[in-house]
Image 1 (cartoon, rainbow, N blue to C red):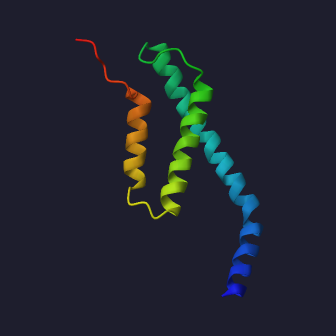
Image 2 (spheres, rainbow, N blue to C red):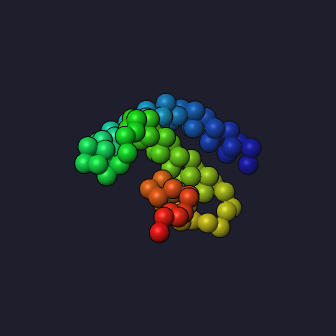
Length: 100
């Protein structure tokens, strides 16, 4: 079993640079798409004025963290449920609208 682990480690180290390059590329593409959506929403008055680039990177990083946590843990919640809740908080906030 130890030899299999060593082989896996060696392969992982060998493949890590390519995987990291791919992750970075996808992160940048996702960020660009979300920045465009956020800026469009601000322009149309649907979103308040924000730093779209920072918000996009933060949201995507949060989702990546959620994916990693739920895929690698024994937690019974699903990735989809966690993403849904996070997106709900992102879009609507935590505070109830107490007007009216």
